Image (cartoon, rainbow, N blue to C red; front, side, top):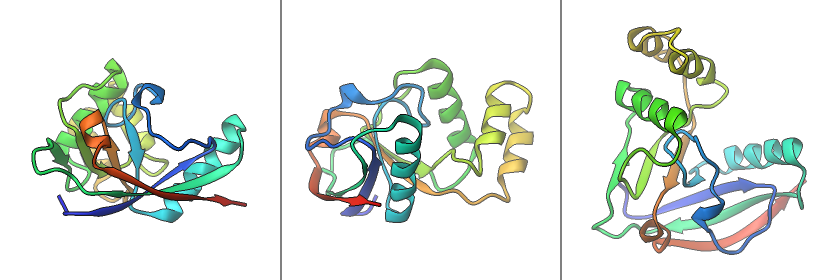
Length: 162
């Protein structure tokens, strides 16, 4: 993992402190706080959240992550079998089906979601899903799953988007 990362979080809610108790369940890498290195992707997520749920506005929050050396970090290099298995486990079982503090890897987003959903439903086997995913490009996500990971996250500010 890089020594330092600038991360963005798109939201429809204003908050100053990350609290894992407010994390949604059955997400790609489990219950956690999700960010990306791509500001425009975070802005798109803020827009989606606002359209779906309303809220106080559309915000992109900015953070700096300087991970401690002893954190347990998992990095996926792409849309791999291991990535697919983690998503299936977390989406089917809920909670956090691993012991990582931080997970970095592709998002199961609009580009990949159809294939992931067919795999989770048992319609695609692993080979079929991997074959379908080969040609797709996915955005990145960095998810934090423990208070130890959050201690390494510095809030830099937020901006409202129109």
